Image 1: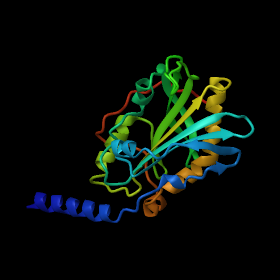
Image 2 (image 1 turned 120 degrees about the vertical axis):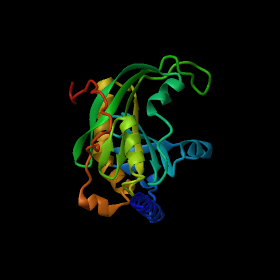
Image 3 (image 1 turned 90 degrees about the horizontal axis):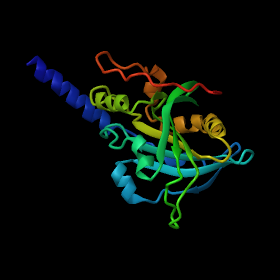
Image 4 (image 1 turned 135 degrees about the vertical axis):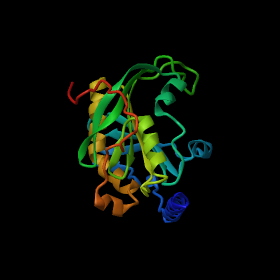
Length: 241
């Protein structure tokens, strides 16, 4: 009997919480902020929206007016109650013809802290362009997942977080935050541009995707609950090296 009561309590808690969810619209992220201006966006692919099972997403190209560095911002938001992300970001670029050169971790500023991100370099020499020619600039790619002020760089751990939220409601949902910079000068410059971009846009992105203000006020923890499998440590790239 006690087991039935517990299951019923969880059931009611989940479905009542899911019904109260307010979704986020990442299209509210501004087109211009500081020295960064949007060059173009590609947000009208409804088939991609369905494939990602996203509630909102943006794919925009920003350029810094002073350094001329370019950052492609890709945000995919899924509200609380949706199932786990069905797409690992690591597979995007190889599927498009890029060759992975190295994969490690780095940090980007977000929610007042340095946050761990996946950090990758790709060779674009064999990528086919829209006009049929071959070869595009190499790419520096960073990504992480964000839920309000909580972040997670490891895809599998983020999947665990989403699964746990079936029992521990978090109405913020989750957002994939991915930055891609084509090589304009050097790879270090590309990474520095992404840091500068997140310094400018990070607070706005956090505000847009934060829908559970009560949870934010109480202070969320980034620690995994006991018993979940740990992810082996990756090689970390400190800023400035």
